[in-house]
Length: 347
Ligand SMILES: Nc1nc2c(ncn2[C@@H]2O[C@H](COP(=O)(O)OP(=O)(O)OP(=O)(O)O)[C@@H](O)[C@H]2O)c(=O)[nH]1
Ligand SMILES: [Mg+2]
Image (cartoon, rainbow, N blue to C red; front, side, top):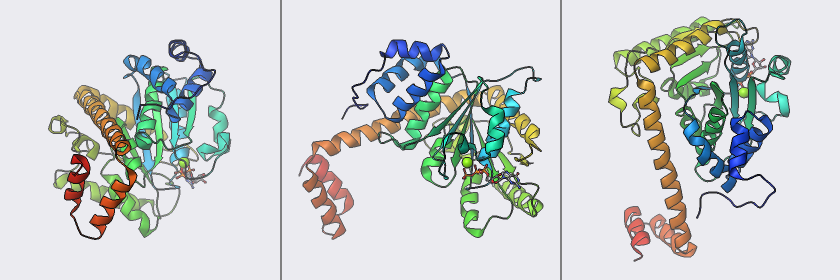
């Protein structure tokens, strides 16, 4: 198996493609993102060229249970980063991963009316991930998309995912800053998701603060956080997790704030914007950002290596042999490790 699908097309060569993307050509960027999503050879070739130009963007993951208001909030945050009165106006890219509701064009951000505030602003680029990659899964494809946006000069990249599965959590691991969005009055089934998401939060937001029950949700989150702090587990999981070899060196002084917002009218978004900036400063001041980046890149290489080696190996053996081994395990004739040994060693 090779990296990338060969697609014969009228696309430009990788060098001129990359140049256009670096020069800020939006159409070229959109086309590149499609190439990356489709895992084409051209897409990977362009990423090879762009890669040394990446590493400048602040990657912000926004995740939470379905319908908590992530899209509305991302929308508001993008506006906050674009505010003309701020000393630094940032170029902002938005990536919506696997939106749970079907969308057509502008509808991905949930609130069509507010979309108009963003549409037409050349400093904003919005992309929705249409497909799950096959090579390294959704996380790998998203990572390629984020690299392309980074190279294209977007200072802030907001990645929205519905925080329900491992793939989504992996995507969040990409982020420098993870914002977990909660909302009052969610059912019990949401609680499990919540507990998992708490582990990855750098900042917690209780959105829909205009609804009853906000204080209860806020109090519950604060006491959960305090409990984790008492157990010494308050550093976001992304900073502690195993594939990050430098985990012990990540500064533990950040304590996730709990903020209230009303995404439909923008209340509290200013404070959230400030908290995100503070978190970025904290990461820079403590050098945690360098450790995070190093660990993430090493992890990415390892993940790709695993995917590709396993795929290659699968191609090298006959399917019926593989199925036979699985059957023998299922029938408890041989153990899983014996099956693997036999498959790999060919006996
Ligand atoms: N009352 C109230 N409604 C809100 C608020 N924020 C978002 N909503 C509404 O909640 C609904 C869901 O908002 P979205 O922004 O699409 O939520 P989401 O988390 O992106 O949803 P999925 O991507 O489908 O998981 C929409 O009807 C919003 O208008 C808020 O602060 N208060
Ligand atoms: Mg959404």
